[in-house]
Image (cartoon, rainbow, N blue to C red; front, side, top):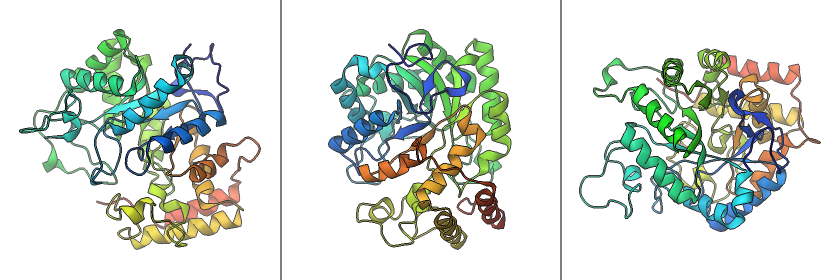
Length: 389
């Protein structure tokens, strides 16, 4: 039994069609990128058990994970392996109730991620490149299926494009960085079509894309007869990065593509724990102060840190925790609530419980116009302060 509108055993919290497809997902999606660095198998099992009991049927991972890549213990694919061990443990019937999403890495020359696609992994000589040509996509998919110990991926996403694009907080397109030999989107889309026809993939999604990229993917999938299979986009979106609200929001609304926002807490900065000095020694920016530098308290701009302080005050006035305010705001946006799902992750079970509290039917916070107006006032003072030219 697979998670569709007509057959679901799991009581899915906030069930909705992802991107208007027949793929039914929960309102919250469990993020996994800390599993294998900050979290071990036991931690992951505990989070997964709690999430499923809460009514979450949607899990997001990637062949690149865990992060950060600078951690001494980092190895690409570890997170998928941890999730795969759990899927094997719960059995096929329980796995069929879940929507499992993963990602294929984009342009990454001499890549340790691509090296982990082989058995045994490639360790000698130059490492293979991560590209989005047909062979690379197929190899990446097979490696993910092997690590996940499953026979299909419910949502396979492009982690970032093969072409040059300013991503991960960059705002300005640099003409001089355009690369020769970019893999055409139609070639990548054709590889996805073949995987769908082979039964290895059910639906496809984008990540870290632009309006141009979305339009090109629409053209490619229409030409290949798989337009209905393109259902989601996973881009950064939070109180500190609201760029999606403009052109991308219109593009995705027109094409019934749901947003899966990542880093809704800006790597934990919007939780307020760093400003209040309550972050523990295992917290991300304590353990890895150089990671996600635009949000790390050690390197974030003064405007970013001031905005966080102001959002914390709004949360206090609304009788919410800072995390609950940040999540509730993202959750309330139409491009998420209509067709998408909010990616929520944590390094401890207590954090996960708090981060899922806004999705609890009895305690779901409603942000009235006064709160939204206060949020917008801070945003207009300095738009997207954590992004840079």
